[in-house]
Image (tube, rainbow, N blue to C red; front, side, top):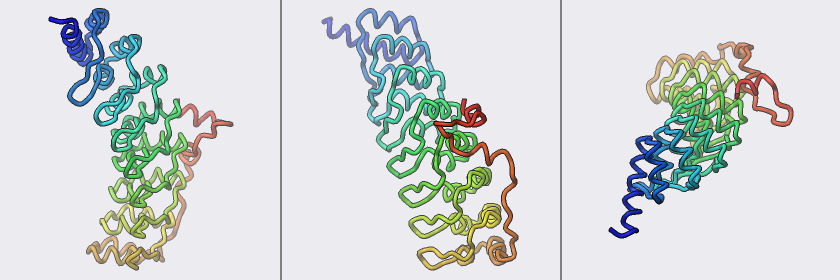
Length: 296
C-alpha cells in the first residue's frame, strides 16, 4: 500500500472517529498523519464533531489546525452544524477560536438563523453576545426574528429583540414578523411583538396588514388582540378589501363579527409590565444592566 493510500485510510478513519466522539482515536490518527477528508456531503471531521456535540474532539481538531470556516456542499460551516442542534458549548468554543459569525449557507442562513429556527435560545444568546448580525437576511429575506416567530419560539424572539433585532423589517414577500406570527396563529409571539412596540399598520406586497392575514385565516384571538392594539379595520389591501371583507370572503363569521364591531371595540394599551423595558434593544454605548443580565 502506497503512502498516499495509507493517508487516505487514516483520513477516512478520522471522519468516523470524529463522528463517534472517539477523542483518543482522533489524536492517534492525527499523529499518524491523517489529513482532512470529507463525506459525500462535503463535511469535514470538524463539521461532524460540531454537529454531534463532541466538544473535546472539536478542541483537538482545532488545535491540530483544522479550518474553522470551511463550508460543506450546502455552504454550512461547523458553526452552522452546531447551531442546527443547539450545541452551545461547541458554538462558544468555535467563537473563541475566531470563527466567522455571519457566514451564509446556500439558502442565505447564518448560524443565528439556524439557532432561532430551531428554538435554541441559549445558543442564540451566545451568538448575539458575540456580535452575530441580528438583522441578517436569508435569500427569502427573512431575519432570524422572522424564523423564531414562524416557529413560535418565544425565548429566542426575546433574545433577538434584546439584541437589537427590528420586528418591522420585511422579507421578500413584504411580511414583517407580526405578519408571520399572525399567519401561523402564534398568539404568544404576537403579544411579545406588540409589547416591543412593533407597528400594526405595516403592509406586505399584497397590501395586507397582519389584521388582513389573521382575518383570512380565521385566527379570532389574534384578530381581537390586533384590534385592541390599534390595528385599523378600515384599511384596504391591493385588492381593495378591508379585513372584514377578507373574513367574509373566507367564510369566517366569528372574525367578521369581531371586525363589524371594531368601531365599538375600546382600544386599550397592553398591560404595563416589565416586558416593555426588557424588550428594548441594547444600547451598546450605555447598556442597561437589566438588559445585559438577560442576555448573559
